Image (cartoon, rainbow, N blue to C red):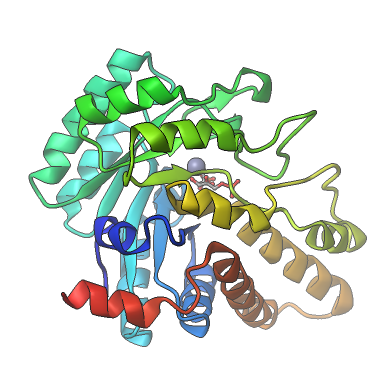
Amino acid sequence: MIVTTKKLFKAAYGKYAIGAYNINNLEQTMGLFQGNIDSQAPFIIQLSKGSRKYSDKAMLEGLIRSAEEVYPDAIFAVHLDHGDEETCYDCINSGFYSSVMIDASHEPFDENIAITKRVVDAAHAKGIVVEAELGMLGGVEEHVSVAEADAKLTDPDQALEFVERSGCDSLAVAIGTSHGAFKFSGTQGLHYDVLEEIQSRLPNFPLVMHGSSSVPQDEVARINKAGGKLLGAKGVDAAQFKRAAELGVTKINIDTDGRLVWTRVHREHLLEYPENFDFRKPGKVYMAEYAKFIAGKNEFLGSAGKLEEMRKYIAT
Ligand code: G3H
Ligand code: 13P
Ligand code: ZN
């Protein structure tokens, strides 16, 4: 069942975070649904501009609608990740997305508000909710490239003004994470002090943490052992998710970790079975491993086991 993130956030706020996972293809979609059903968790599917281009946005929509039939018990939202204004309107008008992210965080403050407000007005007219971003994460996003050193943490006072003036429904905040497999260079870490300040100004308002892959070291070691070259990769300690959830983080975005599972499975498989050229064999292993990964992640988020509670909440 496709629901809005608004419903998911209301039920989860302050208690646990909902996992927001990016998908690009069939294997990821199957693994994602299976993992969330196995762990009995509500979840958010994220589609980036890149994923909508990779195959075709219609193909992704078809995949998700089919997955809904294969997994009728699943409860999830369909969300545009890091949209620009044009892509937001495309998704709003498609009638398929329950939520969009407008990412104008690279623009000056007033311009970010103006762009976000235009998207909010168009989305709310159709019952769609909007995530916006204030502050800048390190790493590379769709249309934003920011050196880690230049990453700008979210200013709590600005966060309040931004939400009031833009009317957005949730806010992605920069509190020290960055996108990709190489986070926390030097002395960087999560800034819970900033998060606390934001929550005190915006109580009960859902916050979003991007760039939250854990980049498990055993995964990185296996990839490198099987011929990969991911040197110095590291991520967010998943044990910190629950504290973040208590401080108002209700959506936690994870993409890179899923790519690492894919890379490990395929590198190891092709090394072990050099004669194989049937992609379904590693594909099947990947779906099972990705499902296992998702179920494990949901334990850290606190969303595991919350599916039936969410179903009842949605029915009220
Ligand atoms: O934050 C961006 C997401 O990880 C999506 O990545 O743009 O390569 O699909 P992508
Ligand atoms: P990671 O790739 O670092 O997990 O970040 C995902 C993300 O923020 C998607 O918007
Ligand atoms: Zn992101």
